[in-house]
View 1 (cartoon, rainbow, N blue to C red):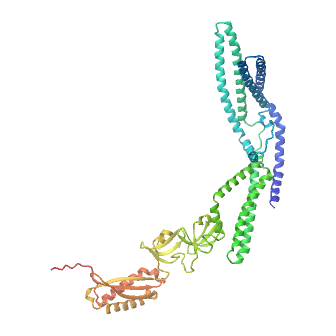
View 2: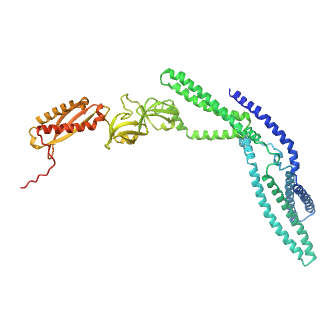
View 3: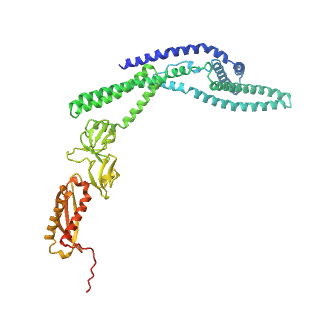
Length: 559
């Protein structure tokens, strides 16, 4: 299937772009000869002729030096002449190469050297594997490297030309002002030698300047149509990369589709948690998908013959494999989690970022659920759960102290109804306005849920010490009876669960009683109203029976 898709894509590309490229190639071939002929300016002919004359002069000088070398019998003289012959022979070869490169339009003559066979060397063989990649990279960087080399050679020969010019001027000056004919004749030979050296350097410098001008000159020949240029670009490496990406994406989507079909029609119908073998199969399927996607991309680049992209692809894979090898223990922990053998297991309770969650489904992106939150579903990368632990839980355990619509009382004195609660924030309706707490800060306020199981109010008040004889008997019983009757005749009576009055303590200036009143959760929105009602009923009862409520006072006793 993969080969068929690749062939179809290649066939469509050839059918669409082939005629255009062929037509462009024919036009280029038909105009290449005319363009070359037109480009041969008088300056180019002059450079070629000057360089050829320099080669001939150098050849004659080399022949003369060789004759002197064979005729000389002095060892020191022969050594000096031998060095000059080698240097002049190298210059001769360099000039010949430069002339041939100029005549052939800058062709790289090193490509036509003799290829020698070498003994087997595994290092050399390993390097030969990456040779196509290096050749492609060399082609891509050939122009800037050549420009940099020419600039370096230009500075090299320019420095020596300046020295030669100065030396020649000095020799000419000495020859002109020589006091005798003998000195003049000796300076003539030296002048000729330095003049040839200067001309040689100047010719080399002219050749380098000519090559630099050619490198920076605008493209010659007829301008190509932008559409043809775009088609030529797309027909090369960009198209190869696009085809490889399309095939890899197609293989990935196909395998993901098959995985979803299996999970929907096989695993979901089973109505049970996946077994160990099912999890192992799922993990192996992910590995197989990754390997097949990578292999399909490499196969496309191999069939297209794009060695540069294939080599870069292999290098990237090698780097990724090295990184995975160094992180292998971490990946093994993740594999154990996926197989439900690690410290976090599916269906258990986990405290993630200081909040409780249920591990709904373990996968590369694990699903965590908290039913008490609005939007209480998190998709967490598996790598983030490696250092966590989960546990089994009881069905009666709460997932959060409150839920939407309930009334709470916080340590900071805030009282209100929970309007919304998410994993990030909890909003309370306090005195008609919304008050927002970060979820963890809300938990730090130790919220009292008044709606869940009801609440109990404690009301303390004191009577004067003149009621000391009846405070624990008739007064307590009468107050308890009248408070129960008062609540039963009010709107709060329907919420009452229990009410009792008990003696609390003998304080410094009063005898204190405490009213203990319990109400169910439906009265949570009337929390402060019930407090006010109990205060009013207590004061009414004291007024009715003449019980005196003392106030703080200071009594001074004198001896």
